Image 1 (tube, rainbow, N blue to C red):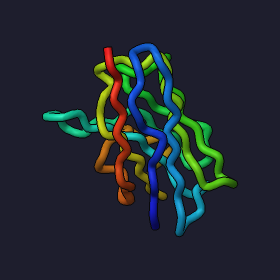
Image 2 (cartoon, rainbow, N blue to C red):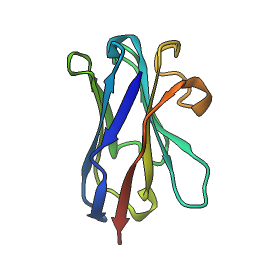
Image 3 (cartoon, one colour):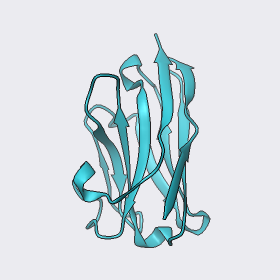
Length: 125
């Protein structure tokens, strides 16, 4: 089981980025996907999660209305569309997967067994 997040970069406040999480070694439609982030000096936090079939989503209050999570199971890829980015969104973003999460779960780290390497998102003011 492997996950690879990509799409991070440097963007000005108000800009947009789309993160991708390509998975291999398993069928994405059997797995919920979670997006998490860790800013310097802070604990990792859940950003957004989506159920295995894509019908249920969860968002952190700080990103509601700005971020959109989705997954394309046939392409084995999940996405995190990030709009109206703010400097406080600066962090390393990780995608994670697990087949046992019910719906979108609680979007907490403990729910996810498989993790990818993160991608850096930096938002300048």
